[in-house]
Amino acid sequence: MGRVFKKGDGWAIDYNDSTGKRHREIVKNATCKVFAKEVLAQKEGEAAERRYFPQRASLAITFNELADKVWEAHGQHLKSRGLRYSWDMFRATFGERKVGLIQPSDIQMLYSSLRESTSVSTANRYIFSTLSPIFARGQELGLYSGDNPCAAVKKGREPVGRLRFLDMNEIERLLSASSSRMYPILACAIMTGMRRGEMLGLRWENVDIERGVIYLLLTKSGVSREVPISPKLRDILEALPSRDGLVFDMPVISFRRGFAQAVKRAGIAYVRAHDLRHTFASHFIMTTGNLPALQKILGHESFRMTQRYAHLSRGHLASEMLAFDSSIPARSVAPLAVSALVDVQQAYELRPA
Image 1 (cartoon, rainbow, N blue to C red):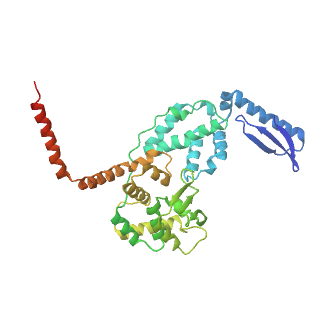
Image 2: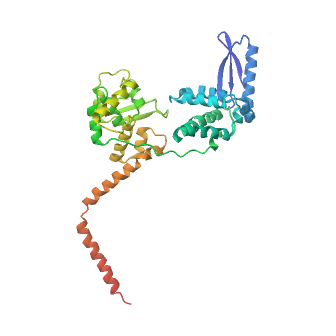
Image 3: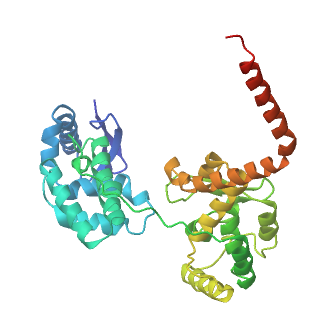
């Protein structure tokens, strides 16, 4: 049961929504308690309608209203730069249509249109990673009921992602060709697998050199993680002149320019900044073969992402098996095996009929 109470010079209300979540709101333009009670009754009526007649609530709210409420609750905290553009596109498509009337066929038409103008991967991100969560979060907030219309759309098969990593010679050439300002950043990328945004946004208060840990709070997945600091990286970080603010105080445009210059001077072809993340992952796997540890360091939500490097682990194990094989005295074992086989054959021939 909700209540009305005095708040400063005005009035406020306290009530639970259809999901049981508690809300405390200041009633705008409330000059008396009676008006605040009317607002409370309206809010509780809407909550009850969503609780006991969810389909009716779905038909009452428009897509724009749904998107606004979900954005206020979740979207504004996400870090993707293109997210706002995507949501604006969805608003332009569905606008004032009632959420409960949006059918899977409508989502399929939008998906087919995106497939014609973008890649399969991009179309999949728009529908299944951006639009579908709007309906899902709306359900969690009690704003929408029924099946998610995106669930009935068949996801297109994406091509295998590009996996380019630098070998040891290329790593040495790239670091040697780097400017004094770029060297620490590129070395950090190669030794940790951190993304460009994670490195350029890293602050000293999130670096514990003594314990050997980097704490990443703002990541692509939204989940914080810890990245170990290797001894060589520790030496590089300790040599930096500042211990305040950003660890690598460099704008994105300066990073792009510095990386391009280093790559050109090193004479390395077909390499992007993100390939340094692949470089760390690839050499980590070839050295350790530990996929679960790599998943944790890279911050992959799905193990499938980490499995991209599994073939390198198998190749490394094969080379280890060759090294093991060379240590076995095969010449002394073979005659024994042949002798044992001859003994078995002779025993079989001498066996009574």
